[in-house]
Image 1 (cartoon, one colour):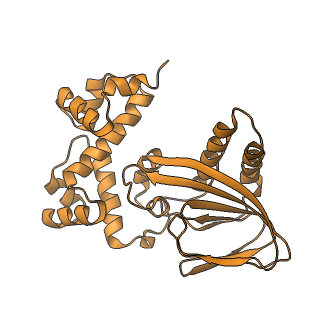
Image 2 (image 1 turned 90 degrees about the vertical axis):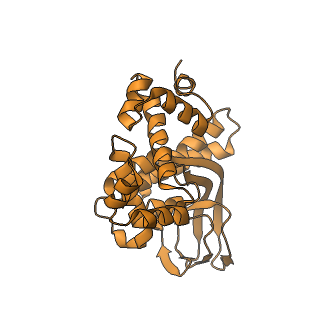
Length: 274
């Protein structure tokens, strides 16, 4: 992944906690699922197991976590006398690309090891909250999920992560996202095509095939996503934010923002102010 695309993707990552279950499983535990309905984290507390996601088979033991993406074909089996694991179900998407698998967009591995010290306290707190009737239960579970995923992301060396995990088309789209995000204007189709070394007609086909967007629609989606972050985090004038992102007419920017988000830039900012 182009490293500087990473912050933009993480900022647009949306997570929603669904449910948590603790399991104590026998040596006979095994099974197959044709398609996972949700994203799942399996944290191994004790014992060992074997998990196959698609054609990739991996083993894990105490302190290991498996990331199981929604839609995956899954098979699994216990490989120890006792197996204790915590299962966390959640939904996830990257708002820039709502139809694309989030873990693949972030190029995440399916197994993480040696997580005991940092991740186990988070999961323990989530487990306690799931059993309580506290008014803060939902908040603790949602915050715990976000902290757990953040812990996984912190372990990835995005600067050196191998781009060959992506097919060629996906990698060019990521380069395009980086180019648009770093541009201080709304780039033309020709400029976008040149940035990723393809023709304008090929660019249009690439965007339609993989994103169901035109190049200009993609540029506006990225810029409005950046605008939302700037409106939340800064006190800068809306006209200054528009200019920084490449919109020379602040009235046009305001109309486009409302069209894409359902509210004006001023109303959006007010949601994050006292």
